Amino acid sequence: MPPHAADESARFTDLPLRPELLRVLTDLGYEEPTPIQLATIPPIIEGKDLLGQAATGTGKTAAFALPILQRLDAGRTEPEPMALVLVPTRELAMQVSQAIQKYGRELGARVVPIYGGQPIGRQLRALDEGVDVVVATPGRILDHLRRGTLSLHRLMTLVLDEADEMLDMGFAEEIDAILDATPENRQTVLFSATLPTRIDGIANRHLRNPLRIQIGASAVVPGEAPLVRQVAYVVARPYKPAALGRVLDVHAPTAALVFCRTREEVDELTETLNARGYRAEALHGGMGQEQRDRVMGRLRSGTADLLVATDVAARGLDVEHLSHVVNYNVPAAPEAYVHRIGRVGRAGREGVAITLAEPREHRMLTSIERTTGQRIAVEKVPTVADLQARRLELTRAALQE
Ligand code: AMP
Image (cartoon, rainbow, N blue to C red; front, side, top):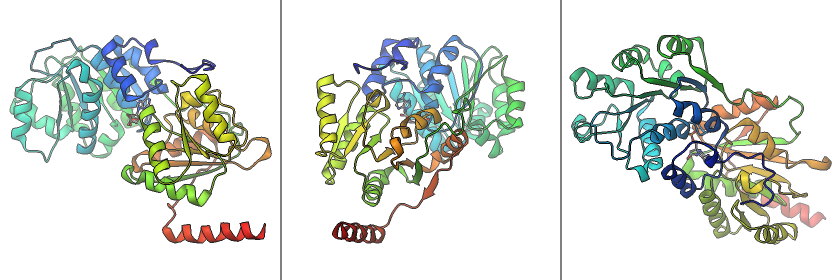
């Protein structure tokens, strides 16, 4: 454990989660629950209906997946699903189903994605074998209901994920029809990045006395966020390591703290960066004080110029001369962002905060801007030509000095 976790941090073990889930979360390197997970996991486990505002990147998938898995009976054999997750697109159906599978691997959860464009025969076989959780796009699931190839009469929980997107895609009637085919006493959980009045329409029709949870709206008072130059680059996941390299070359930080989501990501990224010739050190929540001191010493002496860490590991860290903070992912909540970038630009020095966002996470940048009242400039990932020009510039400056 971090010796000086000051401890404002909440832990997964504080949540009512079974050991099989806690073990998986540890294996995945998740160090602490995100705000949306903290707020929604207990009430969902209690069976409450819930309306949550959360965008991609906040950890919302685990926020509904863990409570579903928490209540999965060990050795359940009923063929009909106990939970159904509706999502707007096939990509999301695959992604969410993989995530639930991953979280539920020690429980042997039977998770099946159902979406249009996939041969129906395969889906029929999967459903025939029995299933605990179905993750589906509305159109295709309705087909199955109409053909009688899927029954929802054992459904305990229904999740509407990215509800605003589903409405934008014209799925309103399908959603109503699907909900009408489920038991009255089921639990309904709705997540949406935005809450237009149309969402209230669905909520009024299908949710019972829902708990409303909004993350990120609690604000940092504008003006209290530090004044730091803030830049973001939108990059698809496979290109992130390469993009980070170029961005680092252009910005040429004297000392940078690079934030990752999980311990695994910290290790992988540190390795990648070192292989590419950067001098990076990993910092873990699990490290002892002595190890931490050694790593910090290398950063202070300039033997390393990049420190790669999770939020938990970086807590209580005192680095005076950081020039850059890099978010390798958009943080799960605007507060975390503000907290991270508060580490640069101290004592009148210029600080720069760099964020790599995947295309799907664009919306989170806007939500951060709203919270901080400050703009994040979205820039193009530097090209090789940009890099050459920048190197020349740096050499010239060095020569002049
Ligand atoms: P989501 O908002 O559900 O799309 O999740 C965004 C990403 O955050 C996914 O890659 C998850 O694996 C990851 N994630 C979710 N919860 C946590 C957590 N508590 N700690 C670290 N990473 C997480």
